[in-house]
Image (cartoon, rainbow, N blue to C red; front, side, top):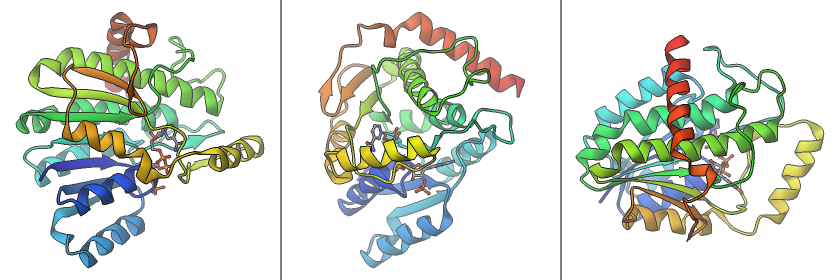
Length: 275
Ligand SMILES: NC(=O)c1ccc[n+]([C@@H]2O[C@H](COP(=O)([O-])OP(=O)(O)OC[C@H]3O[C@@H](n4cnc5c(N)ncnc54)[C@H](OP(=O)(O)O)[C@@H]3O)[C@@H](O)[C@H]2O)c1
């Protein structure tokens, strides 16, 4: 029986994973913004006799303050965390800045994952062997706007999403360099086109593209979680692994450059201390 924390666990891939882990006997803590969906997951779990093994923390993870609160609540719930699975995301065609002053996609898709990955190190260490699974898009092409990480000068929703994937790659690199020798594994995983809600706020052109993506998506969320469950049960040997669905991709490419990862880590800490 493992203790599993899943962000974005009330929809799509996160929900399918939460159900699968619950149904096989794990303790599952889901973090997501909508209390109604959270309550629905709890009720569904109670009906299946698993009410005592599921937990829900409502939170807007685009806010640094909320991530900090969530870290405290996770520590109050589990003394050890066997797996942290990061699935929360929200597409925005129009640039939005959070109440704390961060661009929304940067805050939710990257900064929250930075805060939770680093903030849970002690709980992960307590598990002995633990895995962080950052579900995103490792190794994808794209550009990091080093002088404008929050795309203030020229925002585009797709650009923000693709850049977020690249930032998560570098997060994996610097995180694994810092903690990989402590028995904790970091896995960057691309789930493949999956039939989920693909939630977001879209302009008309993007809304049409998203509908097409949903029609073309080859896999159900239940199919997409198979490699995620596998790395939770069989943590890879190396500190960092990047998977394209269930296939490892080479870390020997610019997406995983340690100097860029160190630079991003420093810039992230500076941005956090400034705001
Ligand atoms: N589906 C695909 O084809 C695909 C392809 C490539 C990569 N991925 C990656 O796979 C992961 C899961 O994707 P998905 O398709 O399952 O996404 P999804 O169905 O859109 O679910 C996203 C989850 O994030 C939650 N969320 C949204 N805003 C949040 C906030 N402010 N704070 C906390 N949680 C928030 C959502 O809450 P609600 O439940 O309330 O909506 C939902 O649970 C993502 O990282 C995505 O980038 C997916």
